[in-house]
Image 1 (cartoon, one colour):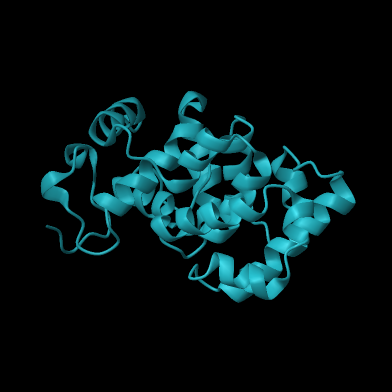
Image 2 (cartoon, one colour):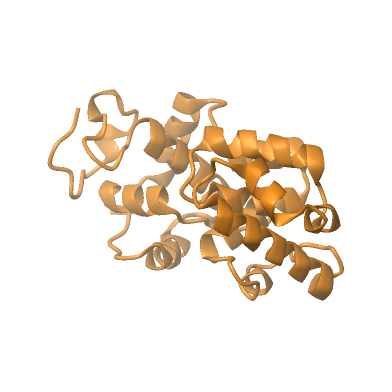
Length: 216
């Protein structure tokens, strides 16, 4: 029996309403692919609140690749601190900005394949940029999407890349773009890695609870 994705999506949308991840909020407010890309790179292993504040500070200094390149690395580190691995990320986002200037004429590529050729950009980041900044189809699979999709019993996969491929086979394309922000929010608020809050989960009856040994 096919997994009831329509019911899942509708319930999560109704439950979380306007509660969306930082990158979804950034994309809706700024509508600039470069800022979405940089926000995505800063967000890795970093809480949403920290990413939002770091991007607010950074946008006061730089909104284009050239403006970011003009900031000395040490100053850039201070601006984005305390995002996770802030020293490495300061160097990385400058390198990415340089690549966009030199190879793409200041324009962020709008295809996953092209984005993946830029050092430091993985599939999750590429998918988020394509879906959030350009409004194209794609399924961004992070740890939340991978974990919850398997926990629900919708897929049976070992890696995020496998999950992305599996979802593209079974998830109706009209849900591709919204799937990530909904499951990320659900994973942070309710369907946590350890001891998920099944007692207050709006989709508990749809979930096979694969791998769940303790819940609240």
